[in-house]
Amino acid sequence: MDEVRLWAPIEESGEREPLITRGEARAAVALLQMLSVRGGPGADVATELATTLARRLSVG
Image 1 (cartoon, rainbow, N blue to C red):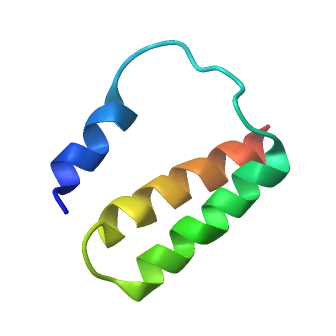
Image 2: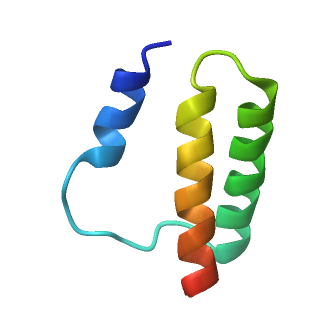
Image 3: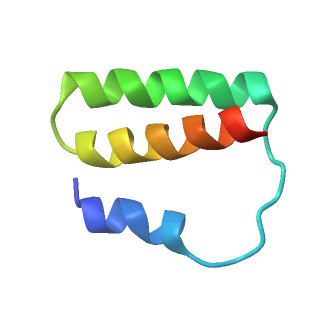
């Protein structure tokens, strides 16, 4: 899996929109953390994205 390809849509600039509930976001963070722990392709991206989403959840 190409990590650069994974980050491309994440890093696109644009307005943020509320697309999911806080509970769904927490579930997404948990799933990303599981992917991160398992290692393998995309684990670094999963770690960074889980960290970013968790930080945003704690602020909001």
